[in-house]
Length: 576
Image (cartoon, rainbow, N blue to C red; front, side, top):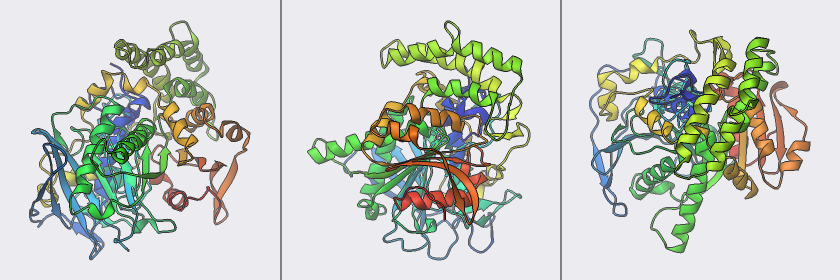
């Protein structure tokens, strides 16, 4: 089976188990998982550096749901790991579903005004989130956030960390959703409360803590932040999902974007039902994701809306999760469109030039347009819908397009950053050693070894051809509802490159379609320096972030933070 694109970098946030590491954006879930892992890593220590040695095991607190059958919560409070700011509350532990499903979460309260700060959910690449399959649990987020994986090697597998959620944390980098990197990944590389130092045994408090992100099926982040509030004032929660990514363990039953949304909803329902999280019930959420988050974002928000309607009608009992904004960076939205973008981008990546030889480009062109090529196979996948035959059709399409479009487009470069090769990647992965320290695991209540790129979740998603399916119609419906939406991308990413993301939203069916096509790009500047090319149509914005790879917040933290702040304030993107 072809590797998921999102896991291309086994970092790529996402991850994913089982799939070849050469997978393109689609498998962004892997990447997400990775992201999550990093996110956890970045959680910082209070005064400068915090060493992991002398840490005592945390006291376990427990809560059983009175609404959901066989769902319970166990966690430790204020472990002193990562977030060391005096008086700032944190919790980490597991949501247990049934007898053998334990989903890891790590929550950080807002550093200021915790009583009123909005709630942030970060879904990293399919990754979360995560880019990229759901098996990546990388720790980029700690220093960075749903979404997700950082080193994507064309030959490695993706971690399937389904989701990483950030509830009120403002990581160093903004971080993406759906890369499935694990919470630690997200926090450490993009926006978590701390950053793991080069020694792999200590952390430094992260001044860029943001509290948002969502990317691959591996990670997912929902962010709740009041308009005009500094990011560090928001509570954030990271979640390693699906099972098998990060610190989550047990029997994994999630094999698609749809099933990931259902499990994610279960997790948040018990969190909000418990006394520890009940205070956040009435707050709006900002759902941020990356990479596979192009699947997760539209799917999760759509599912949340459906569940909210059912709660309002009395059909089900639960706590509404009202999403006020959706942010997806370097997402995998529409494989048919974005596979063609591999050819377009490799031919002339704006600002970087031609990436591959004429001979390689000709082969890619033939592979896309020939009879039974990528175009025809992807269209067949779309036409098959959810029929019993669709899995086999979509798996075949995904494998063919990955092998003949994604892999040659990347060549010997880093799929998440065309300026790097696959042997020297940024951001670093110091968090892997830190999360393996027995004292750290005992202190935060982790009961399994941290898995950055698990194969099992990736295989499950691969068996349904999830990566080859489109979620563009759902994204268009959300845009049509006037939900605040930001689609943004680092322009040095090959995996889920900005040309493919832009072509996808231009093809999206919504009331502002023609206006978006007619709106020219303008530069967004910060103190006179151009940081992105932007388009705004009412509540919808698109941004190409200059000189940034797949995990935008890790590469351009200042720009990412400003963009995040403007979305939180429900403003159109603008210069400052």
